[in-house]
Amino acid sequence: FYTPAEVSRIIARVVGIGPATRQDESVFDPTCGSGSLLLKAADEAPRGMTIYGQEKDNATWALAKMNMILHGHETADILKGDTITSPQFTNGAQLRTFDYAVANPPFSTKAWDNGLELDYGRFEFGMPPKKNGDYAFLLHVLKSLKSTGKAAVILPHGVLFRGQAEAKIRRELVKHGYIKGIIGLPANLFYGTGIPA
Image (cartoon, rainbow, N blue to C red):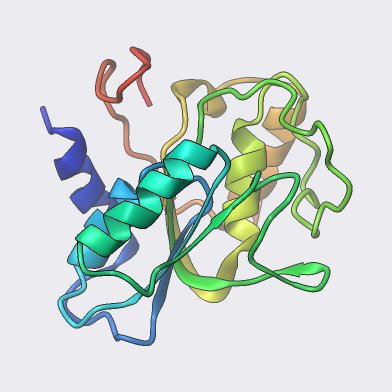
């Protein structure tokens, strides 16, 4: 079994962050928490890279800012707010795009769309159900990538088989070639949840 830190490093490698990563390339985490996934991703780029993140919870956002400073990434741009209802990295009515994205969003968020006014084109493949925000985060990440961008998103196992709106979104993602691989992770790997991802 891998530790969460090892999983974070593997995620960075899966998206292609490594020795060849250029300093002008960017990594984004729309649900960055304390910033550990971003830090591990950036550590895989020995020449450095630009770090962007957003966090909803005030205390956790402050911790992420502090972690960036403590780990030598003082210029990391970590903004505060709800990624779905109030994305901070925008260019007008469009989301800003990045070279890489890594994310471990909260699993199965209920009422994720409370306060949603602009969709920024994120839901062209369908609107995720109100009781399950997993695909809302995945579609946000997808829309936040450059045309050559790559992402790895940790989601609960249920995204692979739930029906209705999620099945329609899943079909569209596969049909358009956005899914390059699925990696199964064991239960009890992540803090706060015992389900497989």
